[in-house]
Length: 546
Image (cartoon, rainbow, N blue to C red; front, top):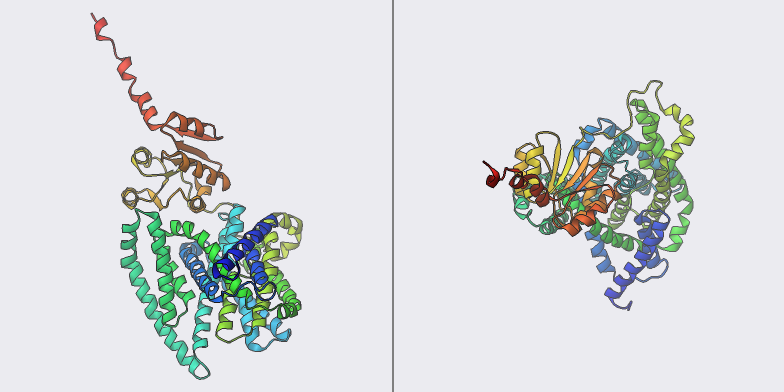
């Protein structure tokens, strides 16, 4: 079976599924399992992978989807809403880690170029892992969660710029580096202007006409990501930069949430092949030789990165609790660190032992920081007195709690006949959010002052995009039992504690939904009959009149 490419992929997926189950038992992110599988099936252990070209292609598509989703989530408003702390902390931590990381790596005996690349790789933290962990703990809307996501976005921007520099310097040599960087910069400006024009005039028009089919929206978004990545690679900017820019170009559209919800599973599967491809470049002997340096650099990332964040936030007047919880978000390196190291290897700037070093630091820091974040509040309670040194005597910022612009009275799912009737009678009395995948319905209600969100509620992942922490009620006007049960399960998974109202047309569906705890069942036809038909029987009987 393993003689064929298909058989090898099947074996990889089976091993990955097994490793993923083990990672879940240990409460570890899947990225740890993916790295372990990459090493296991690579030449360092089992040597199962010989279809290297096929794996490399899937790896490239996986990286393109990953960067597309990062760009898609690039919410500039988030950086503004958290004030200067996201920018100052993000850049401050990058500078500190780069400088100190370079000194440490150079002192460990690595040459200058390798030390620079390793130091840069140490600066980036994993947006994907932090978002997942904070989401599971329902802390994304707390102040420390919003600040953490803000400075992680700043880091994502920096890593893309670093990729551009690596690509440019990798294309030239010696005295040609300066001119090559200038040429890449000119191409980049033209590329960005072209994408900006398309994003302003063509993409909204196109996606509005595709919006009737969420599946076609997702397919078109994926095609856009890969096509822009391929074009960017063709002009010398690298596929990674193009995919990231493709995501940014759709980040301000109404379709970002449905694209993110649908593509996240594809990303998780395809990114596995990046780590498989990475594992094929690792040799057991060289990896073992990096254990000592990896432990030293891991200790620096786990301790030094949170400390510098706490120092910066303390100087800005934040309370020690917010500073500590925010700082734990940078106590690991990112999957982008591994991508950056692999890119540097591909252009000949570093050797494979350096990639092995970065990979080992990634495994150690991601594994340990996961537990730090999962038990962050318990850890804080134990060491809070010692953290007073990072807090001003009279802190002016950092009161925890959900950060929002006001609560929604209800999130209304579905803008059809029943949903429209509900919105017509209630939108002037409170703040409502309409969720639908009909662009015409969304446009109509947006013009009437109702906030809208494009999305297909049959996708359980979409519930993560809903502002549930800011809503008093969720009302689903879609009279479909499976849709209502899927929504209810997603709401419970995300810990929603407000009112839930679901719609049923038949008696059987109403009985099923009524059996669910905390659910109010709406029956539009029956309710209308109860309210309107009694007049037929309440009027005086003409036959009995004098």
